[in-house]
Figure (tube, rainbow, N blue to C red):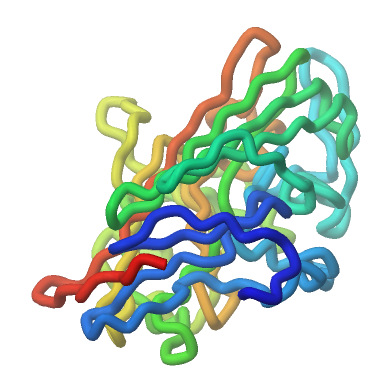
Length: 323
């Protein structure tokens, strides 16, 4: 990591240490001990800035902040206020994770930093990748003992659409386990089915009796997922709530995910790790029945996601040395 080629900003200590770089406001390290006190980086990452800059197509988006719009927008277009906007296409005819040059490829500015908290800021100009409005965005990473909290905020001077997330791949036992073996629980009764090109059909489907039912913990298995689950919300409450738990049977390490977002995209196509992307639904601008991703000129986009790291019951970490 010392040869990365860009300043690494580290926050936290003791139970959790997080490393972030300005390129893409990207998490390059989440260091946490196992039951033997072995400290490991539990997210996939590249070892050089050049590798982040020259990612092959399709990009892996390791640890990056994703925007302006996480996930896919069909046919790289949407209509807002009666006007059609054409976006850059980078997933066949579709837009994925903000287009050809999304937030993951931007150099974010450090706005605030302390021992346990780091805020990055980025301004995306009107017309960037085809999106309307000058959008000012911040992402704040904060370590709270054994948890990483990520707060997103965005403002615009013209109506636009926004969907922000982080694209970390969790590798809970680096080099010793496969993502297919991880046990996953998702607090969702439904998901959004997709076409062969991974664009939602618009249907809301029940997970009951399908391979998408992770309401009880079970192994992910060899068949990969690139799926959006609709997170449960009591009485329509979209406050901070449990979304998922990922656990490795090898070390007992687990990560609990809590979020204010309505959806969770799980990507297990990388055998080394699993992405748990809290976000709005894919292609929402073209599906009026989905939760809206429209941000008005007088509004503020805000969302929070917390990743809490621990060990299985009965195991206890020996602590993370400060550095």
